[in-house]
Image (tube, rainbow over all chains, first blue to last red; front, side):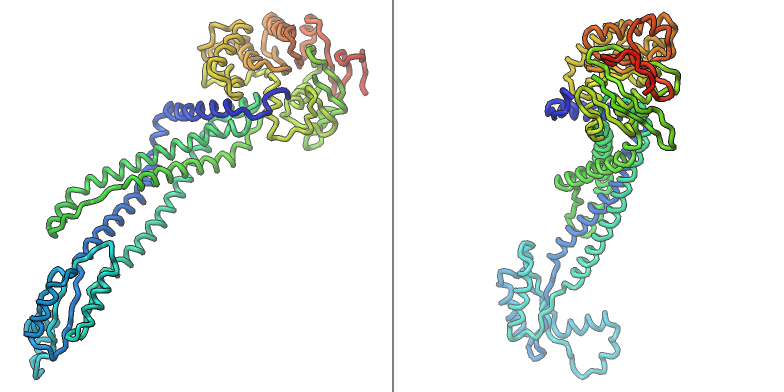
Length: 312
Length: 230
């Protein structure tokens, strides 16, 4: 008619601000049910967040294990002990090598006897079949992952060396395991995200039913669908945000409870490892995800149930 | 203001609530809609407020053909109509002030403007001291007046009332009708559905009478004195 059909940006902004605070007020007027819903959302979010954090810490730990990477140099059997000593001295000067230790043929045989269980069988051999082995501890620069491979090639090219072997197999296995764990966390996280969606959706559905009279009257006096939808969407947003913040607090609390025993354990392994918490980026992601899930959940509920209510 | 052109409303199941109703309510006029219950009074009001859609015919409201209004735009039509119900339709979870402020909130008025207009509306219905009361604590007549204040607070061009005095004693009913008269005097078009013929006669306003969904007496369309059943 004469007025109102045109879009009024000021009225739009006033409405949004009003509803943002109004829906928060609505939630605080029923503290018990709000707290329960928030807690359920928070727990559903804390689980994947905690698993993610655990995985992150293990990954960090395995990085520090890289420093214990060793290269074993198996020399030709013809190489004598003195030639090997000379090679050790030469390698000590290499600027990518921390230190080198020598395992003589006799020491090697002794270790093999002890560890392999073939001790008695070895007595039947005429001579010692084992070569001299040099154990090289490289200086690892985490920023240059290919550096060790280069060093490996360089060492292998020495004519005294028959075989250079990098003891990294187990690190690779660990990474493969971590990769699997990563997927598992994504699967759990997705399922629990879906749970948050359903929790918010159901809470909003009940809210819509409780406010049926208000919705009917609002429609009768000229409220647009967007106007009626808005408080429910903001309610979903508040649920998501408060659930996300509580999940963050719960994660931090669990972490601080674990920090001391983990430090003790690390000390027993002569490590200065410390648990790392959620980074600013992680927290932003957590809150963005929880707000997004809250909004989406309420959006779905509102879309399904609001059209059913028409004045008659 | 309102122009019905051969409007029929048939509900699913075949019941015809209105049959070929035609009339015109000039702008600024006050009129009654009479007839027994079941004559189609409520249906007629619902068609104007777009709560129902006609099966046939056209309704022109303030120059706008309501058949051309999509569901999306229905709210903007309703914002220019004040509707009063027999059972008030008040919200009991908030005080009188918030009930009356609803149409203004929906249209995004500023807080100060809302306060000014709500107080003015409360003053007009004589409930200035009740703004903080809960509607449930008010008498039937007072609740009805809150409903009226909510219907007029945004100064609509048209006021529709469906049996506004249905639950009130004659003295209170007269008061309510006189209130409508006052709104009419400042230019608002008013259409009141009521079966209380004594009261209508007392008020002396013109009426449109319905019987079984048909117009049996039309005193409001200009140039039409007593058009019998079409």
